[in-house]
Length: 47
Length: 53
Image (tube, rainbow over all chains, first blue to last red; front, side):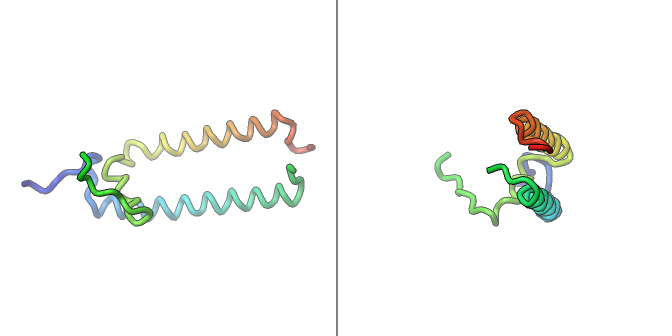
């Protein structure tokens, strides 16, 4: 049948390409959040 | 429906973008994360664990 169009309309290559950038940005977000939590623990532990 | 292959994650994670179009949903996703972060900070400050705790 004609090349299968995905539900989102993205091709496999576009989805993989976007996901690579999404992983980078998400990793940076988690890294920064972890750093911020370490600062709070160092300055003022909540337990 | 039962013969649909089960995804193997994280290697199949990228397939979410075959269902969810980031051109439409990336900003709503990021704004939802922001809303959760604001809510968590709100609660943390509300229970008195703010700056001077």
